[in-house]
Length: 168
Image (cartoon, rainbow, N blue to C red; front, side):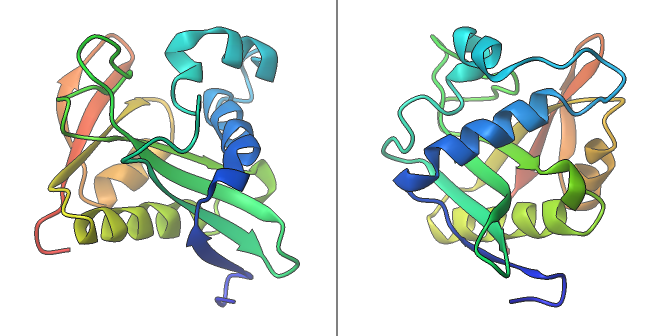
């Protein structure tokens, strides 16, 4: 257990429901917006495909767990093709990162630890880049930039960012 009261472990098939919870948390990052329910997130293929069938070959993820073993956050990578791209799609060989942390654990370093660990494991697996999409107003964007992601594309409200993994 780390000094923050949590530890990190690899995501497994048994974490599929929790990853879905974290996808819903990521979609609902802005408390000022009307919350999008789990059923609606899963009914929309554009969001559901981040967790459908977890894990598929090539998926990689990390889960943060508190002292009692309860998961409190997750970060995972999934490849998408040009025929079914994610929001942050760059290329069919660059997996897209999703991150979610329980609201009560935000601002405590969990997201930073998850991003760093999933990047480390991705580099160990031979990946050279990872990507993501983040709304500019989301404070997580600053975290991603601080961790080495750079903007490679922009839409009206969001940016596509890439992290190069060489040397990690």
